[in-house]
Amino acid sequence: MTDAPTIDAATLPLRVAAETTPTSLWNDSADPEELSRSIGFGAVGATCNPVIALAAIRNDLETWGPRIAQLAEAHPTAGESELGWMVVEELSIEAARLLEPEFRRSGGRNGRLSIQTDPRLHRDADALVEQAVHFSGLAENIIVKIPATATGIRAIEEATFRGVSINATVSFTVPQALAVAEAIERGLDRREAAGLPDHEFGSVVTIMGGRLDDWLKAWVERNRVLIDPGYLEWAGVAALKRAYELFVERGYRSRVLSAAFRNHMQWSELLGGDLVVSPPFAWQQLINDNAIPVEHRIDRPVDPRIIEVLLEKVPEFRRAYEPDGMTLDEFADFGATRRTLRQFLEADAALDALVRDILVPAP
Image 1 (cartoon, rainbow, N blue to C red):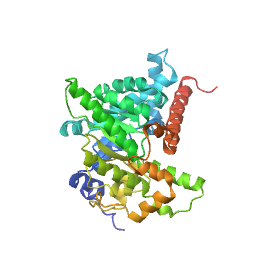
Image 2: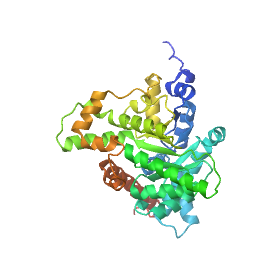
Image 3: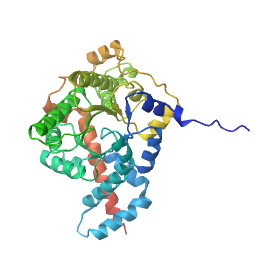
Image 4: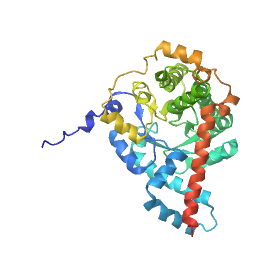
């Protein structure tokens, strides 16, 4: 029997891309074990959200179960939600430490750990800002996620002014990305006008390409629209490429971030751009295991025929792809926004239930 071939980590696609292109790899989880392995692939940052945080806690209940009990004892009047968020903060701080070397090396452009504001605050800009400022103080390299809705965008401008590094979330479309980038610019300009210190914020603007694809697939099924199903795999990629082109053209001081992976093109088609790709660790393993080629593809347009058909047959794609496809007030009602926000709220409720089971075990 022959031994299995040894894989040289330096030849893995993710490592090659990290070392030969300006495209930055971040890990789509704050789970410390996954993040450590992702750093080995070349990851220089990490993102998180309520669904991901809940999974990380559930996957290591041997650690977090006793810790929740300790926190409950130390804070006898704290409710289950407050205790759950204490755990999310601790998880984030632990992951942020792993990224500190890259934060120092890059001058703050990378090496950042995203923590998301409580989705239950999505209607209150002032509350989002206050929580963002609090999270920003947990570690020097924290970056805070705020939803790309009209309320969230108001909060993004104010939080930027107050010195918070931003990562937009609940964001799926070109018009949302542009609105977030403009809000960050306004916040930075206000800081300059007020004489506040300038530094590298490392802010990023997420487009959850796979969740856009998910919504368009649901929309065509609901509306009985027949279309080549392969075309719908390109929708998120097309939005990401369009947004990137406009960010470069307009000189924004933030970067596009590709998240919510559903296919490897949400990595491979963006290579060569000065942006961030943030696949879940399982997708990173798939990309490496399948030796997906590392090619400069950010400037290669999506097949015009695919764009033409999507624009013609799927009005929701037009809203997502065209820079003026939606107004600010329409962001919250976009299908992908409502679906994702509900999932984040459900994850919050599930974390509450997990803490409740520890505090008040079933008889």
